[in-house]
Image (cartoon, rainbow over all chains, first blue to last red):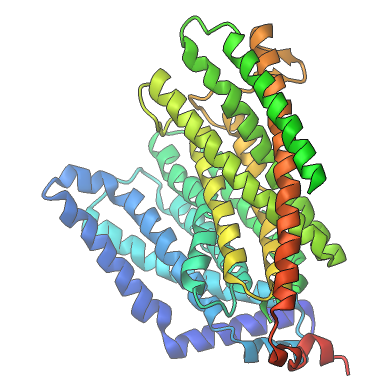
Length: 224
Length: 236
Protein backbone atom coordinates (compact mmCIF):
# COMPACT_ATOMS: atom_id res chain seq x y z
CA UNK A 1 0.00 0.00 0.00
CA UNK A 2 1.23 3.49 -0.78
CA UNK A 3 1.79 6.10 1.92
CA UNK A 4 -1.47 7.88 1.13
CA UNK A 5 -3.48 4.65 0.98
CA UNK A 6 -2.18 3.77 4.45
CA UNK A 7 -2.92 7.29 5.69
CA UNK A 8 -6.51 7.28 4.43
CA UNK A 9 -7.14 3.76 5.72
CA UNK A 10 -5.95 4.72 9.21
CA UNK A 11 -8.10 7.86 9.14
CA UNK A 12 -11.09 5.74 8.08
CA UNK A 13 -10.52 3.22 10.89
CA UNK A 14 -10.17 6.02 13.46
CA UNK A 15 -13.41 7.65 12.34
CA UNK A 16 -15.19 4.28 12.41
CA UNK A 17 -14.03 3.75 16.00
CA UNK A 18 -15.21 7.25 16.93
CA UNK A 19 -18.60 6.65 15.25
CA UNK A 20 -19.05 3.53 17.37
CA UNK A 21 -17.80 4.98 20.65
CA UNK A 22 -19.03 8.55 20.18
CA UNK A 23 -16.60 10.03 22.73
CA UNK A 24 -16.31 13.39 21.01
CA UNK A 25 -19.88 14.11 20.04
CA UNK A 26 -21.63 12.44 22.98
CA UNK A 27 -19.30 13.35 25.86
CA UNK A 28 -16.75 16.08 25.13
CA UNK A 29 -19.07 18.26 23.03
CA UNK A 30 -21.96 18.44 25.56
CA UNK A 31 -19.41 19.16 28.29
CA UNK A 32 -17.95 22.00 26.21
CA UNK A 33 -21.42 23.47 25.59
CA UNK A 34 -22.14 23.36 29.34
CA UNK A 35 -18.84 25.18 29.95
CA UNK A 36 -20.00 27.77 27.43
CA UNK A 37 -23.16 28.31 29.48
CA UNK A 38 -21.17 28.85 32.67
CA UNK A 39 -19.48 32.07 31.50
CA UNK A 40 -22.66 34.16 31.01
CA UNK A 41 -23.99 32.87 34.33
CA UNK A 42 -20.89 34.17 36.13
CA UNK A 43 -21.17 37.53 34.35
CA UNK A 44 -24.76 38.16 35.43
CA UNK A 45 -27.17 40.05 33.16
CA UNK A 46 -24.58 42.25 31.47
CA UNK A 47 -25.65 41.41 27.92
CA UNK A 48 -23.11 43.75 26.34
CA UNK A 49 -20.24 41.99 28.13
CA UNK A 50 -21.65 38.58 27.21
CA UNK A 51 -21.93 39.62 23.57
CA UNK A 52 -18.38 41.00 23.52
CA UNK A 53 -16.92 37.93 25.21
CA UNK A 54 -18.56 35.43 22.84
CA UNK A 55 -15.78 34.98 20.26
CA UNK A 56 -13.06 34.88 22.96
CA UNK A 57 -14.98 32.23 24.92
CA UNK A 58 -15.50 30.24 21.71
CA UNK A 59 -11.77 30.06 21.00
CA UNK A 60 -10.81 29.45 24.62
CA UNK A 61 -13.29 26.60 25.06
CA UNK A 62 -12.65 25.35 21.54
CA UNK A 63 -8.93 24.98 22.21
CA UNK A 64 -9.21 23.63 25.77
CA UNK A 65 -11.87 21.06 24.97
CA UNK A 66 -10.38 20.48 21.53
CA UNK A 67 -7.29 19.25 23.37
CA UNK A 68 -9.47 16.63 25.00
CA UNK A 69 -10.79 15.58 21.58
CA UNK A 70 -7.24 15.21 20.26
CA UNK A 71 -6.07 13.32 23.32
CA UNK A 72 -9.12 11.02 23.29
CA UNK A 73 -8.20 10.08 19.74
CA UNK A 74 -4.64 9.29 20.78
CA UNK A 75 -5.93 7.25 23.74
CA UNK A 76 -7.65 4.81 21.36
CA UNK A 77 -4.20 3.83 20.13
CA UNK A 78 -3.39 1.14 22.70
CA UNK A 79 -0.32 -1.10 22.74
CA UNK A 80 -2.01 -3.93 20.86
CA UNK A 81 -3.07 -1.62 18.04
CA UNK A 82 0.40 -0.08 17.78
CA UNK A 83 1.97 -3.54 17.64
CA UNK A 84 -0.52 -4.59 14.99
CA UNK A 85 0.32 -1.58 12.82
CA UNK A 86 4.05 -2.28 13.28
CA UNK A 87 3.64 -5.95 12.31
CA UNK A 88 1.58 -4.96 9.28
CA UNK A 89 4.45 -2.72 8.19
CA UNK A 90 2.46 0.51 8.40
CA UNK A 91 4.68 3.55 7.89
CA UNK A 92 4.83 5.48 11.21
CA UNK A 93 4.58 8.73 9.26
CA UNK A 94 1.38 7.46 7.60
CA UNK A 95 0.02 6.62 11.04
CA UNK A 96 0.70 10.19 12.17
CA UNK A 97 -0.84 11.66 9.01
CA UNK A 98 -3.89 9.39 9.22
CA UNK A 99 -4.43 10.25 12.85
CA UNK A 100 -4.13 13.95 12.00
CA UNK A 101 -6.72 13.72 9.22
CA UNK A 102 -9.28 11.83 11.32
CA UNK A 103 -8.69 14.08 14.32
CA UNK A 104 -8.98 17.22 12.23
CA UNK A 105 -12.30 16.04 10.75
CA UNK A 106 -13.66 15.35 14.24
CA UNK A 107 -12.31 18.60 15.64
CA UNK A 108 -13.76 20.61 12.75
CA UNK A 109 -17.20 19.09 13.44
CA UNK A 110 -16.75 19.80 17.14
CA UNK A 111 -15.82 23.46 16.51
CA UNK A 112 -18.70 23.88 14.06
CA UNK A 113 -21.28 22.85 16.68
CA UNK A 114 -19.53 24.99 19.29
CA UNK A 115 -19.65 28.01 16.94
CA UNK A 116 -23.39 27.64 16.47
CA UNK A 117 -23.82 27.33 20.26
CA UNK A 118 -21.76 30.50 20.78
CA UNK A 119 -23.85 32.47 18.27
CA UNK A 120 -27.08 31.29 19.93
CA UNK A 121 -26.02 31.84 23.56
CA UNK A 122 -23.92 35.00 23.22
CA UNK A 123 -25.47 36.87 20.26
CA UNK A 124 -22.07 38.31 19.33
CA UNK A 125 -21.72 41.23 16.93
CA UNK A 126 -19.60 39.63 14.25
CA UNK A 127 -17.97 41.71 11.50
CA UNK A 128 -19.23 41.50 7.93
CA UNK A 129 -17.79 38.63 5.94
CA UNK A 130 -16.89 36.62 9.06
CA UNK A 131 -17.91 33.10 7.94
CA UNK A 132 -15.02 32.53 5.51
CA UNK A 133 -12.15 33.62 7.80
CA UNK A 134 -13.68 31.94 10.87
CA UNK A 135 -14.20 28.63 9.04
CA UNK A 136 -10.68 28.79 7.59
CA UNK A 137 -9.07 29.55 10.96
CA UNK A 138 -11.20 26.86 12.67
CA UNK A 139 -9.97 24.26 10.16
CA UNK A 140 -6.34 25.36 10.68
CA UNK A 141 -6.79 25.24 14.46
CA UNK A 142 -8.33 21.78 14.15
CA UNK A 143 -5.35 20.50 12.16
CA UNK A 144 -2.77 22.07 14.49
CA UNK A 145 -4.44 20.88 17.67
CA UNK A 146 -4.76 17.36 16.32
CA UNK A 147 -1.09 17.30 15.38
CA UNK A 148 -0.14 18.52 18.85
CA UNK A 149 -2.54 16.10 20.52
CA UNK A 150 -1.12 13.20 18.51
CA UNK A 151 2.46 14.13 19.40
CA UNK A 152 1.60 14.58 23.09
CA UNK A 153 -0.44 11.37 23.08
CA UNK A 154 2.52 9.42 21.73
CA UNK A 155 5.10 10.75 24.20
CA UNK A 156 2.76 10.11 27.15
CA UNK A 157 1.47 6.70 26.01
CA UNK A 158 1.02 4.25 28.88
CA UNK A 159 1.68 6.75 31.70
CA UNK A 160 -0.73 6.70 34.64
CA UNK A 161 -1.09 10.52 34.66
CA UNK A 162 -1.33 10.71 30.89
CA UNK A 163 -4.40 12.95 30.56
CA UNK A 164 -3.08 15.72 32.80
CA UNK A 165 0.48 15.46 31.51
CA UNK A 166 -0.50 15.53 27.84
CA UNK A 167 -2.70 18.58 28.51
CA UNK A 168 0.23 20.33 30.20
CA UNK A 169 2.35 19.66 27.12
CA UNK A 170 -0.31 20.68 24.58
CA UNK A 171 -1.72 23.81 26.27
CA UNK A 172 1.34 26.10 26.11
CA UNK A 173 2.41 24.82 22.69
CA UNK A 174 -1.10 25.54 21.36
CA UNK A 175 -0.76 29.23 22.08
CA UNK A 176 0.18 30.26 18.51
CA UNK A 177 -3.08 28.60 17.42
CA UNK A 178 -5.09 30.52 20.03
CA UNK A 179 -3.44 33.83 19.10
CA UNK A 180 -3.75 33.27 15.35
CA UNK A 181 -7.41 32.24 15.46
CA UNK A 182 -8.62 34.93 17.87
CA UNK A 183 -6.66 37.69 16.12
CA UNK A 184 -8.11 36.72 12.73
CA UNK A 185 -11.57 37.80 13.92
CA UNK A 186 -10.15 40.86 15.71
CA UNK A 187 -8.34 41.95 12.55
CA UNK A 188 -11.53 41.49 10.54
CA UNK A 189 -13.44 43.67 13.02
CA UNK A 190 -10.75 46.39 12.76
CA UNK A 191 -10.76 46.19 8.95
CA UNK A 192 -7.11 45.16 9.11
CA UNK A 193 -5.56 42.38 7.03
CA UNK A 194 -6.11 38.85 8.29
CA UNK A 195 -3.32 37.34 6.20
CA UNK A 196 -0.56 37.61 8.86
CA UNK A 197 -2.70 35.68 11.37
CA UNK A 198 -3.70 33.05 8.83
CA UNK A 199 0.00 32.68 8.04
CA UNK A 200 0.75 32.18 11.76
CA UNK A 201 -1.76 29.30 11.78
CA UNK A 202 -0.45 27.80 8.54
CA UNK A 203 3.17 28.06 9.71
CA UNK A 204 2.33 26.40 13.03
CA UNK A 205 0.47 23.58 11.28
CA UNK A 206 3.31 23.05 8.83
CA UNK A 207 5.98 23.09 11.56
CA UNK A 208 4.02 20.52 13.57
CA UNK A 209 3.45 18.38 10.46
CA UNK A 210 7.18 18.39 9.69
CA UNK A 211 7.97 17.53 13.33
CA UNK A 212 5.34 14.78 13.41
CA UNK A 213 6.41 13.14 10.15
CA UNK A 214 10.13 13.63 10.80
CA UNK A 215 9.95 12.21 14.30
CA UNK A 216 7.39 9.51 13.47
CA UNK A 217 9.81 6.59 13.84
CA UNK A 218 11.33 7.71 17.18
CA UNK A 219 7.76 8.43 18.32
CA UNK A 220 6.72 4.89 17.45
CA UNK A 221 9.69 3.45 19.36
CA UNK A 222 8.95 5.72 22.34
CA UNK A 223 5.30 4.80 22.60
CA UNK A 224 5.89 1.03 22.74
CA UNK B 1 33.76 16.70 41.95
CA UNK B 2 36.99 18.71 41.93
CA UNK B 3 36.23 20.42 38.64
CA UNK B 4 32.78 21.40 39.96
CA UNK B 5 34.35 22.91 43.09
CA UNK B 6 36.93 24.80 41.03
CA UNK B 7 34.24 26.15 38.71
CA UNK B 8 32.01 27.11 41.66
CA UNK B 9 34.93 28.98 43.23
CA UNK B 10 35.59 30.84 39.96
CA UNK B 11 31.84 31.55 39.62
CA UNK B 12 31.73 32.98 43.17
CA UNK B 13 34.60 35.37 42.43
CA UNK B 14 33.11 36.32 39.05
CA UNK B 15 29.69 36.97 40.59
CA UNK B 16 31.25 39.14 43.30
CA UNK B 17 32.97 41.16 40.56
CA UNK B 18 29.68 41.28 38.64
CA UNK B 19 27.86 42.53 41.73
CA UNK B 20 30.47 45.26 42.17
CA UNK B 21 30.01 46.35 38.54
CA UNK B 22 26.23 46.25 38.92
CA UNK B 23 26.27 48.43 42.02
CA UNK B 24 28.82 50.95 40.75
CA UNK B 25 27.41 51.43 37.22
CA UNK B 26 25.48 54.71 36.92
CA UNK B 27 21.76 54.55 37.65
CA UNK B 28 19.26 55.35 34.89
CA UNK B 29 17.97 58.93 34.91
CA UNK B 30 14.30 57.89 34.87
CA UNK B 31 14.30 54.42 36.42
CA UNK B 32 16.84 55.13 39.16
CA UNK B 33 18.36 52.14 40.95
CA UNK B 34 15.67 49.79 39.62
CA UNK B 35 17.65 49.62 36.40
CA UNK B 36 20.28 47.54 38.26
CA UNK B 37 17.84 44.59 38.23
CA UNK B 38 18.82 44.15 34.59
CA UNK B 39 22.19 42.78 35.78
CA UNK B 40 20.37 39.69 37.07
CA UNK B 41 17.47 39.69 34.58
CA UNK B 42 19.43 39.79 31.30
CA UNK B 43 22.04 37.13 32.24
CA UNK B 44 19.27 34.85 33.54
CA UNK B 45 17.34 35.05 30.30
CA UNK B 46 20.50 34.59 28.21
CA UNK B 47 21.25 31.43 30.19
CA UNK B 48 17.67 30.21 29.81
CA UNK B 49 18.05 30.47 26.01
CA UNK B 50 21.46 28.76 26.13
CA UNK B 51 20.14 26.02 28.42
CA UNK B 52 17.13 25.24 26.26
CA UNK B 53 19.32 25.31 23.15
CA UNK B 54 21.61 22.73 24.78
CA UNK B 55 18.55 20.70 25.79
CA UNK B 56 17.55 20.56 22.12
CA UNK B 57 21.11 19.66 21.12
CA UNK B 58 21.28 16.87 23.73
CA UNK B 59 17.85 15.64 22.64
CA UNK B 60 18.74 15.57 18.95
CA UNK B 61 22.06 13.85 19.66
CA UNK B 62 20.28 11.24 21.81
CA UNK B 63 17.87 10.49 18.96
CA UNK B 64 20.84 10.04 16.61
CA UNK B 65 23.41 8.34 18.84
CA UNK B 66 21.31 6.80 21.66
CA UNK B 67 24.08 7.55 24.19
CA UNK B 68 22.93 8.29 27.73
CA UNK B 69 25.37 11.19 28.17
CA UNK B 70 23.27 13.23 25.71
CA UNK B 71 20.16 12.52 27.74
CA UNK B 72 21.96 13.62 30.90
CA UNK B 73 23.00 16.85 29.15
CA UNK B 74 19.42 17.52 28.03
CA UNK B 75 18.01 16.83 31.48
CA UNK B 76 20.54 18.94 33.39
CA UNK B 77 20.24 21.81 30.95
CA UNK B 78 16.43 21.79 30.99
CA UNK B 79 16.32 21.90 34.79
CA UNK B 80 18.74 24.83 34.90
CA UNK B 81 16.89 26.53 32.04
CA UNK B 82 13.63 26.39 34.00
CA UNK B 83 15.41 27.79 37.07
CA UNK B 84 16.95 30.69 35.12
CA UNK B 85 13.64 31.37 33.33
CA UNK B 86 11.92 31.61 36.72
CA UNK B 87 14.60 34.05 37.92
CA UNK B 88 14.29 36.06 34.70
CA UNK B 89 10.49 36.19 34.95
CA UNK B 90 10.57 37.16 38.62
CA UNK B 91 13.15 39.93 38.20
CA UNK B 92 11.28 41.20 35.12
CA UNK B 93 8.05 41.38 37.10
CA UNK B 94 9.74 43.19 40.00
CA UNK B 95 11.16 45.70 37.52
CA UNK B 96 7.75 46.02 35.81
CA UNK B 97 6.02 46.71 39.12
CA UNK B 98 8.51 49.50 39.84
CA UNK B 99 8.66 51.08 36.37
CA UNK B 100 5.35 50.25 34.64
CA UNK B 101 3.32 50.23 37.85
CA UNK B 102 2.26 46.58 37.43
CA UNK B 103 4.08 43.28 37.57
CA UNK B 104 2.16 41.73 34.67
CA UNK B 105 1.15 43.61 31.55
CA UNK B 106 -0.69 41.94 28.69
CA UNK B 107 0.77 44.58 26.37
CA UNK B 108 4.18 42.95 26.84
CA UNK B 109 4.59 40.09 24.40
CA UNK B 110 8.03 39.17 25.81
CA UNK B 111 6.54 38.55 29.26
CA UNK B 112 3.70 36.40 27.94
CA UNK B 113 5.88 34.32 25.58
CA UNK B 114 8.48 33.78 28.33
CA UNK B 115 5.77 32.49 30.66
CA UNK B 116 4.63 30.11 27.92
CA UNK B 117 8.21 28.89 27.43
CA UNK B 118 8.46 28.32 31.19
CA UNK B 119 5.36 26.10 31.14
CA UNK B 120 6.49 24.20 28.05
CA UNK B 121 9.67 23.16 29.87
CA UNK B 122 7.78 22.44 33.08
CA UNK B 123 5.83 19.98 30.91
CA UNK B 124 9.14 18.56 29.66
CA UNK B 125 10.34 18.00 33.23
CA UNK B 126 6.96 16.55 34.22
CA UNK B 127 7.22 14.08 31.34
CA UNK B 128 10.68 13.05 32.51
CA UNK B 129 9.43 12.60 36.05
CA UNK B 130 6.44 10.51 34.98
CA UNK B 131 8.38 8.03 32.81
CA UNK B 132 10.16 5.35 34.86
CA UNK B 133 12.01 3.34 32.20
CA UNK B 134 15.25 5.26 31.48
CA UNK B 135 15.37 4.40 27.76
CA UNK B 136 11.72 5.27 27.16
CA UNK B 137 12.17 8.43 29.24
CA UNK B 138 15.18 9.50 27.18
CA UNK B 139 13.39 8.79 23.88
CA UNK B 140 10.16 10.59 24.77
CA UNK B 141 11.79 13.60 26.37
CA UNK B 142 14.21 13.87 23.43
CA UNK B 143 11.27 14.20 21.04
CA UNK B 144 9.69 16.89 23.20
CA UNK B 145 13.07 18.59 23.69
CA UNK B 146 13.49 18.95 19.93
CA UNK B 147 9.96 20.34 19.46
CA UNK B 148 9.96 22.65 22.50
CA UNK B 149 13.01 24.63 21.37
CA UNK B 150 10.85 26.59 18.88
CA UNK B 151 9.83 28.65 21.91
CA UNK B 152 13.33 30.14 22.20
CA UNK B 153 13.35 32.17 18.94
CA UNK B 154 9.69 33.03 19.54
CA UNK B 155 10.57 34.60 22.91
CA UNK B 156 13.74 36.28 21.61
CA UNK B 157 12.09 37.85 18.56
CA UNK B 158 8.76 38.60 20.28
CA UNK B 159 9.92 42.20 20.80
CA UNK B 160 10.40 42.54 17.04
CA UNK B 161 7.34 40.55 15.93
CA UNK B 162 4.70 42.17 18.15
CA UNK B 163 3.90 45.66 19.39
CA UNK B 164 5.11 45.38 22.96
CA UNK B 165 6.12 47.33 26.03
CA UNK B 166 9.43 45.51 26.35
CA UNK B 167 12.32 47.34 24.69
CA UNK B 168 14.02 45.74 21.68
CA UNK B 169 17.48 44.16 22.01
CA UNK B 170 20.03 46.60 23.50
CA UNK B 171 23.13 44.64 22.50
CA UNK B 172 23.01 43.98 18.75
CA UNK B 173 25.39 43.10 15.96
CA UNK B 174 25.30 46.69 14.69
CA UNK B 175 26.14 48.23 18.07
CA UNK B 176 25.09 48.75 21.68
CA UNK B 177 22.23 51.13 22.47
CA UNK B 178 22.94 51.70 26.18
CA UNK B 179 25.65 53.59 28.11
CA UNK B 180 29.06 51.93 28.09
CA UNK B 181 29.27 51.44 31.88
CA UNK B 182 25.88 49.73 31.96
CA UNK B 183 26.68 47.40 29.06
CA UNK B 184 30.05 46.46 30.63
CA UNK B 185 28.30 45.62 33.92
CA UNK B 186 25.78 43.43 32.08
CA UNK B 187 28.49 41.65 30.09
CA UNK B 188 30.54 40.94 33.23
CA UNK B 189 27.43 39.50 34.87
CA UNK B 190 26.65 37.42 31.78
CA UNK B 191 30.12 35.88 32.02
CA UNK B 192 29.76 35.30 35.79
CA UNK B 193 26.32 33.69 35.43
CA UNK B 194 27.58 31.53 32.56
CA UNK B 195 30.41 30.16 34.72
CA UNK B 196 27.86 29.45 37.46
CA UNK B 197 25.68 27.67 34.88
CA UNK B 198 28.64 25.52 33.75
CA UNK B 199 29.40 24.55 37.35
CA UNK B 200 25.76 23.67 38.09
CA UNK B 201 25.54 21.72 34.83
CA UNK B 202 28.56 19.59 35.70
CA UNK B 203 27.24 19.03 39.24
CA UNK B 204 23.81 17.97 37.91
CA UNK B 205 25.36 15.64 35.34
CA UNK B 206 27.49 14.02 38.07
CA UNK B 207 24.34 13.63 40.16
CA UNK B 208 22.51 12.02 37.21
CA UNK B 209 25.36 9.52 36.81
CA UNK B 210 25.17 8.71 40.54
CA UNK B 211 21.37 8.26 40.24
CA UNK B 212 21.89 5.83 37.35
CA UNK B 213 24.42 3.82 39.40
CA UNK B 214 22.05 3.62 42.37
CA UNK B 215 19.17 2.58 40.10
CA UNK B 216 21.33 -0.16 38.54
CA UNK B 217 22.48 -1.48 41.93
CA UNK B 218 19.01 -1.50 43.46
CA UNK B 219 17.46 -3.50 40.62
CA UNK B 220 15.47 -6.51 41.79
CA UNK B 221 16.39 -10.05 40.72
CA UNK B 222 13.17 -10.37 38.75
CA UNK B 223 14.04 -7.26 36.75
CA UNK B 224 16.63 -9.30 34.86
CA UNK B 225 13.86 -11.28 33.15
CA UNK B 226 11.93 -9.19 30.68
CA UNK B 227 9.72 -10.13 27.75
CA UNK B 228 11.31 -9.18 24.41
CA UNK B 229 10.22 -5.84 22.98
CA UNK B 230 8.38 -6.05 19.70
CA UNK B 231 10.91 -3.72 18.10
CA UNK B 232 13.59 -6.32 18.84
CA UNK B 233 11.77 -9.34 17.40
CA UNK B 234 9.70 -8.02 14.51
CA UNK B 235 12.43 -8.64 11.94
CA UNK B 236 12.87 -12.33 12.93
